[in-house]
Image (cartoon, rainbow, N blue to C red; front, side):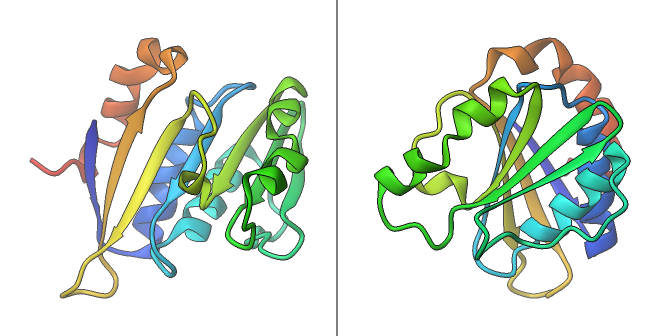
Amino acid sequence: MIELRSLSPDDTRSIAAALAQLARPGDLIVLAGQMGAGKTAFAQGFARALGIYEPVTSPTYTLVRTYQAGTTTLHHADLYRLDHTTEVDDLALGELLEDDAIVLVEWGDVVDLGDHLQIELRLDNEDVQQREIIITSSDRRWAPRWERLEAGVDEWLIR
């Protein structure tokens, strides 16, 4: 587990950018946290670091947006409005991963999505700009990248 402190939305985007530098096709990254915690800001920083310069917004109503940067495909999904596991199954997130893509899922913690890297964003009750960001992984493919991830986010580590 990696515990980070973000002091602003720009910090959140920078943390996401550091993580994006290590992301690989086939990675499933789940963003968790209450409304307004910074999931979309994280997605924006992540996409920008991949070379995606078009506006990245939460796909709450479209459910999935796809972005292309060179040979990298990013599928950005939002499960907030889905009420049933069958609706999540209909999105075929597993097939999106097979598309040699990175899949970033907001509200993905509401269902079991299998092996993934999870980014939990927690609001600070005293400072509306600050967030605690907890990174955990159930995906063994992140193990060889873990030390580089820790080094990449070192300036935000909670010590």
